[in-house]
Length: 66
Image (cartoon, rainbow, N blue to C red; front, top):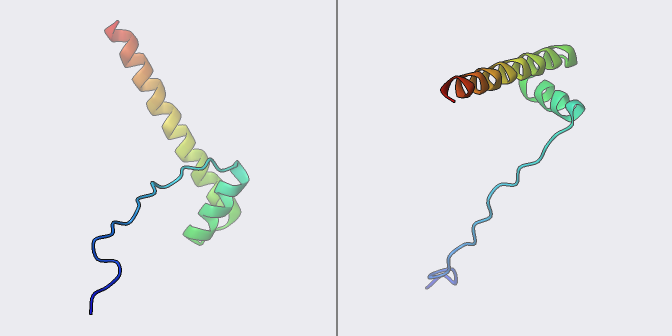
């Protein structure tokens, strides 16, 4: 017996990126990491500081090249 899906390709849908509010991000982290809201907020703040530090470092190194 032949399957009806033989020869048919599935359509690919790339994942959609959504931007969360700070509150949504905190709730998401707290739920996934099984931690308190305050611990989730602290983690998000530390990640944001790290991201800003890296961006600042990249910007300053580009300025040195020019």
